[in-house]
Length: 192
Image 1 (cartoon, helix red, strand yellow):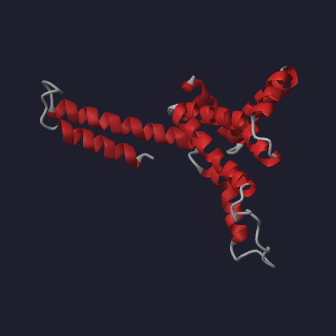
Image 2 (cartoon, helix red, strand yellow):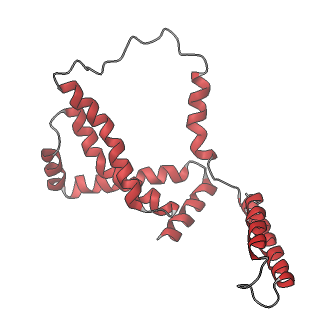
Image 3 (spheres, rainbow, N blue to C red):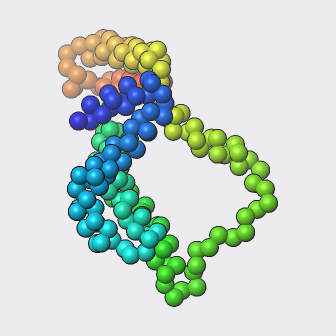
């Protein structure tokens, strides 16, 4: 499944850098939509089981989509989904804590302060950077990826050639093995 999701992510990245993120958001949304339309009893049970405060209830009801998205992102990146799901659940605690503290007798009310008369300097640039940052991470054009793959192959060929010259009898007993592997790692890093 990891390979399938990675291939799908690559295909969507070629269409547009933000396409994988959109797909990642659409899958859990569609799953929740299907449950709400086809199995409303499950959704009503979830609503009755969750918090009664309207805002906290919205956060609670978003958890299935958050958990699904975290799991798909982890699998697509080749990581353990459990870690991502745990992190997503912990992240959802923050807004729930906000609503619980607001409802408590503590002096915390969670109200916003007076808005500034104008945005702080650089706010527009920060907004633009944050909007386009996901598209900048790890995307390459097909030509760039082909160049990178060629560079990696050349690095492997150079290491194999050196290994055959310096370790003709046995790779396991070769005294130059660590140096050859270090050089390969350095050359592979230069390809990125």
